[in-house]
Amino acid sequence: MARMLERIERICRGEELPPPIARLVGFTVTRVEPGRVTVEMEADERHANPMGTLHGGILCDLADAAMGLAYASTLADGESFTTLELKINFLRPVRAAHLKAVGTIVRQGRTIGLTQCDVFDQAAELVARATSTCMTLRGEQAAGR
Image (cartoon, rainbow, N blue to C red; front, side, top):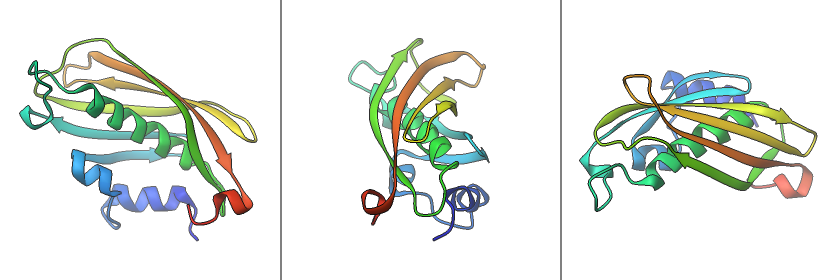
């Protein structure tokens, strides 16, 4: 099994299909380095809530993907992870916008790690900030994940 970093790099270069959620929501991986991943998307009326602004779940999906990929980019062969907790603050309303989510690792211990993500619009305004607690899985826990 290839290291996750290599797989994420192939997705970023278009050499491997992105995960199904990326295709469903419409985001792409645009930059990857160990512990830091950027995902971007064009948010439009398809992503709106009943009030006409971007549905919070879409922002959460975007941030979750950036944080999860950042965490996964540091895993060794045979390791996987799961999210234990996710929190997001919505800071500005979004309608139609080009969004950039930058996920980074704040701290990574042997088993538990903390990630964060800042989501910006095309004017480089911070529209959301998220954090996530992740748990690294090894051995039988990681099998098949």
